[in-house]
View 1: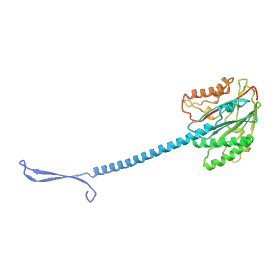
View 2: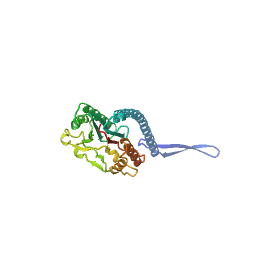
View 3: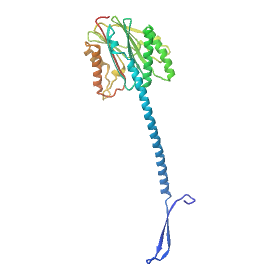
View 4: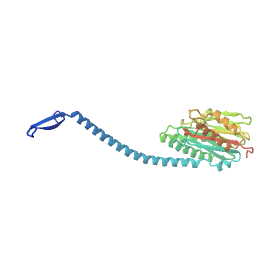
Length: 318
């Protein structure tokens, strides 16, 4: 290179006569500064790309390890959720009502919650929907289940359970730095009477005259985990559930299940299918509704957790 930074390609050619006599040389100088600069830049770019690819490869390996770890954690959380769900034998042991339930999470760990308890000849059914889904929602679901189970066993009434749960969960959510909340309703069935408290989706009751009574729960409670004290918002609604009549609880994953065109399954279709099989057992009704939801979705991916509970009043109140 010259002092000014330019680079030349230098070549020499000998000058000879036809009989080979040497006369000297001709020198050729060609400015190749631009070419060398481009080559240098390309080399630098190549080295940068190489280093970047090495980093990506290392990151990929770390992500594979992390994904395996996360997958293991999610599998454990999902196993815990499945383990604490009511078993069929528990539901069948309830004398006064015939209960069936179905839950399918949108991914490894769901944010839906339900449980069934039978205490002093009263069946208590709880259902909730935590905002979002995934590991955080699954952990909150486990907190909710543990808290409600404990409070029922110590004899608290439904409104006391909800206010205490709210206080406990609000503290835990703050510790987690989470802004999640949940809708939650609690239903009790005793001797043909239903009492419901808490804000959630509608409660459907299939009456004897093939009429569906839709009970709005918006005014019966307030989302859990948002306010310090929800007791002013809580109220009960009571109605009869005659022998052969059916009550249905569900999360929005049921009514908002989408087909290939983005159309929701909808509450009207849920009512129509449930009415069609109303005279069957609660398990049959549940199975038929779930099958119809799957048909509507045409085997598409479940985008939101799906939970369905069917409660049919037996002829004998037990």
